[in-house]
Image (cartoon, rainbow, N blue to C red; front, side, top):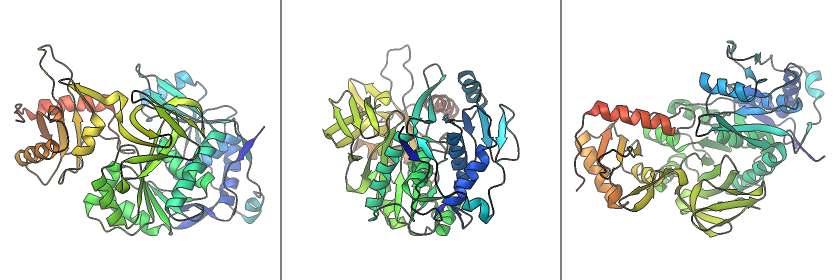
Length: 465
């Protein structure tokens, strides 16, 4: 049976991670994996709750050695954990916290390996079968029950290597060996899992063990990361970082994902960080698929080996790590087999007065407006009157009074979107209910929050003209 090594092994003494300025070598990682694997239960799967990115990676490797997989749910709420246990009754938690998780059996990370003899015994990375189930990414179905999407080690490796080659080429390098990653996204999220943990294990890079959230912490993590260094982040975190005004050290590449990035924000980031910015496109079903340099144009370019087909209604990707034709959950304009433009998500298309757009498209233009720190459109549910429902824009713009904010937003959007989609109401809010790890707005959470926010404003609808 074919297999893929657990880690990139050109130099086992090269760092896999950096913790508080101290290097953790790939050799030490292998020793820690074996140490933890000996302490795991006989059966899994593992719910890896490790906050430290290195310990998360150790948990992943230890589970693979024991023939177990990692569960990657959208969150770790009590309801989600209960649903996981219903699907996978033998689930246990791995944590690096001193407080055990009372919701399910818990294994705590042991002390990490030390000693020359222990480290010297890890001369060869273990080979993991390509068909081994490495992770299951869980998304919420229409009933709320988690839907597992299995990820096998060999295909994860192929996807990771294709992505690493794209990133290295953008940096003018042959590989990512020697590159340090600072990630604002958690390892438990698919994007953070692929673009920090796997890119280090299988692509040769090293990651900072922390997940900085506040702008000053991100700046400090970048400053201590050896160059060449890369920031792995989201549009929400990036915009918050740039708007903070904190001094930022130069880096060598910014990688962004989870939502389309406006060219204005990409240009600001490239100027402030003195580095190119790449966006990465992917989905749960297919993994990472394509990249674009946002300031160079709207076109996305697939990884080598992948090709697209589509007629506008549905686009399908296949090749490389995507062995079976896989429909994409977005509306694409397929230019050729390797090039496309992203028009919006198929599940956020809205129809007003016979015209169609997508909420992601509207949000893209809303967040490009000068003075808007964050913003999102929401379409209220139809009412019984039969009147045309118009979208509402919730906007975070602390420097603008509500009256001026509405005028500026509507005037700017009038230049960019069809008049049918101009917001009937522009509501000034202090913040949006985004998930702290990824910056996403969960649909159900946002809808409930939007109804409460509208009720609290007591703002009368006014005409956009």
